[in-house]
Image (spheres, rainbow, N blue to C red):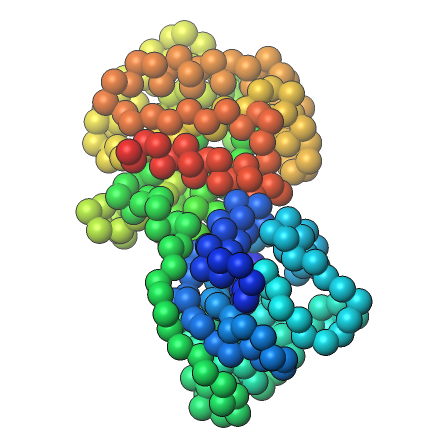
Length: 377
């Protein structure tokens, strides 16, 4: 589960409806580039370096898996979409929107088109003041100074004042109204990736399945008949132990918890893999355990067609998964969907991600968040 980058952007506008331009830019950044997790107040400042109308400015913190170069490419495209026309002139000019990368994690980077951290950030109040709203703990990786220290040393004497609050996109999606969300899906559906993104974006606690520690798994893929029962029993015992231990660390009434599995997946896989008499014994034990387990407030099932699952499995390259047959994946999918239909007390959201890649495409990730939001309404 790769951690997302934290990017700080500075936004400015001094043409047209400046407030509307900024809000529209924030929304498009969130939907097309990366997840906007924090937004500063809106500031009005004198134009810097040239005579013109005053600017409206803000700063945002964005999460993304993209590289800094890819983010730059995306925001230049977005500026053009919003109506900015760049010229060859190196002098400052009025603009309908301006988006600058101020910081990218704690990286130090310089090229002909991009310098991180931004070389002028310590000299500009309209950058430092909004940053202090949302990233006051950020430390300049070259100057080794905090935002407050940079503010105290800044020579910018221009007028820069707070004028309004801005809406942050994630404020509309109150996932913390759910205390416990479980994300499920077939092998290769991307459940752990989604859990990682949600946890980082919404500051949630995670419960992640320890699939790689099971010694029966590689043996099962080579000889399913022989190793199915010990595999499923060991998974059940491990999941029960892990969920009990992990959830015991949290307060289910206060903490926001997101897990990449729910224990009833054990029954789904067991029904597919076990002989009929083994399954009857297994289900008896499962029912006893299941009654004791806390149930998620929201259960998300990521549906993905078999062809896409096989592509994902091949791409992630786990050797013991490479021989999984398509028929097995289809049985698992059908097992999930059939079992979900019987769960009258489970708050279920099924999201078809067969044609979506929420790791690479921000639009696909925000689509899932929108679907979750509908369950809150």
